Each structure stands twice: as structure tokens, then as C-alpha cells.
Image (cartoon, rainbow, N blue to C red; front, side, top):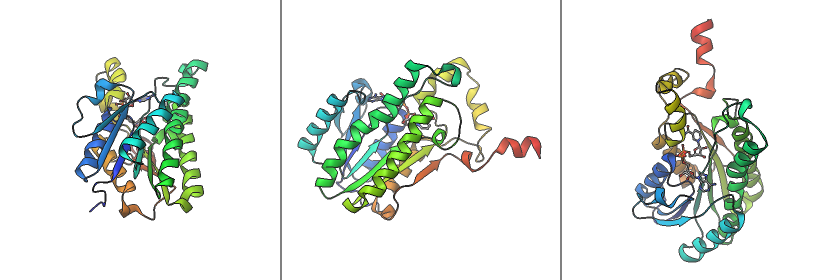
Length: 251
Ligand SMILES: NC(=O)c1ccc[n+]([C@@H]2O[C@H](COP(=O)([O-])OP(=O)(O)OC[C@H]3O[C@@H](n4cnc5c(N)ncnc54)[C@H](O)[C@@H]3O)[C@@H](O)[C@H]2O)c1
């Protein structure tokens, strides 16, 4: 149904909470997956994939990894740029060091992977790029440096969509709301009741799951979305549609 049978799909952050689900969803659609992460141990649990371990903020290492993936597995039909990281929760945590770290990983690190992959994809006749951005790129929900980097990713995605459409490249972003993955462990460790407070902000009364994000990635990458490019798609259980607490508490 998704037209992804035997297609080559490269996924970064593949060992993380959302990444593992993206790998599983593309495998279920029949794709050949190259799973990338900086943490080899996180890739151990993945079966039936080709594994590639490299640090995205190291531009040379990333370019070498891309060359090796393309030489061994061919250019990807689909690139899912999914790795990301944030710790500086509010403006109080933003300083030169945290700003540089979060822009390096989330924006420049994504560029380090996407740029050389795009060249291989274009030489191969085109393909689809899906980036995992966040609702923080669409409105402010905390994590200022991460939010700025992820908004930069949306702008970069649009540039690819507009300029490289003629090369048969489509590019889209997914903007997830809160998803319970290891990325939340440090917050839940501080406040074990945190997730109940988080859910209260979501119109659907639940959080998106890693599988919800993965399903959106499969759709956007597939020929079913063949005329969709340049879009930032919230997968956020309604968070960005409006302010539920305002409705409940004010009106
Ligand atoms: N969990 C959420 O609530 C949420 C919400 C919106 C967006 N996102 C985004 O979804 C994506 C996946 O997040 P997750 O929740 O699965 O987090 P996660 O921490 O479980 O997984 C992130 C993965 O990316 C890898 N990674 C991080 N920095 C890297 C680097 N510099 N080089 C190579 N690999 C690197 C990590 O090793 C990890 O396996 C991220 O881009 C994140 O910003 C997550």
C-alpha cells in the first residue's frame, strides 16, 4: 500500500524512542533500513537493519559515513533525519555553551547528514526527506535553543522543497508534541507525576506515541504523499490547534 517495498530508507537517531518506532514502521512497509545513531549500544536491539554509528556534529565523520552507506547500500530513496537532543529547558538554562550544543546537534548536525545524502539521492533520480522537528518550532513550549534550531530545520526543509523539487526531491517535517521516550527520563526523574500534568494540555486527552510519529513519517515518505512537499505536519494530539486550558479555565 505504501509503495516502499525494498526501498532503501536511512534513519538517524534510530536507537532512540521515536527512532526505533520509525525503523519498525518502515520495516513493516517492506523497506530496507539503514539505522544510524551515535550510540552503538542503542542500535543493538534492532534486527534486520544495516547499522551505521557516527556523531552528527562531526561533519567529516558524517560525510564519511554517508559515503560508506551509499557505496554499500546505494543512495537512499528516503532519508528520515530524526536525531535530536535538548536539555536547556527555559531561558534560564540558555547560555553560550547550551545554545551552541543544541544548535550543533539539532540544526547543523541535521545539515551534515542531509546535505551529502541529498547529492546522492539527486544523482539516483530523487527521493523523499522527512525531518523530525517539534511543536516548539511552531510556538513557544520551552527549550529556547532547541526550538530555534528546530525552527531552522523547518526553514531548511522548505528551501529543499522549493529548490530541489525539480530534482524529484520532496521534503517535509513532522512536528511532534510531547512523546514519552527516553528524552523525557530526566524530567520524569525530577517529577514522577509530570506526565499527568502534561496530558492535561492535550485536546485529545493523550500524548502522541512513537508509533504515531512513525506512521506519519511512513506516509510522508511514501508515494501516497507524492504531491506533499514543504509541509510542517504537527503530530501533537491537538496541542497547536489552540489553548485547551484557556477554554477550560477562563470561559
Ligand atoms: N520525545 C518528545 O517529546 C519529542 C517531541 C518533539 C520532537 N521530538 C524529536 O524527535 C526526535 C527523536 O526524539 P526521541 O524522543 O526519540 O529522543 P531519544 O533521546 O530517545 O532519541 C534520540 C536519538 O538520537 C541520537 N542522537 C542524539 N544526538 C545525536 C548526534 N549528535 N549524533 C548522532 N545521534 C544522535 C541519540 O543517541 C538517540 O538514540 C528528536 O529529534 C526530538 O527532538 C521528540
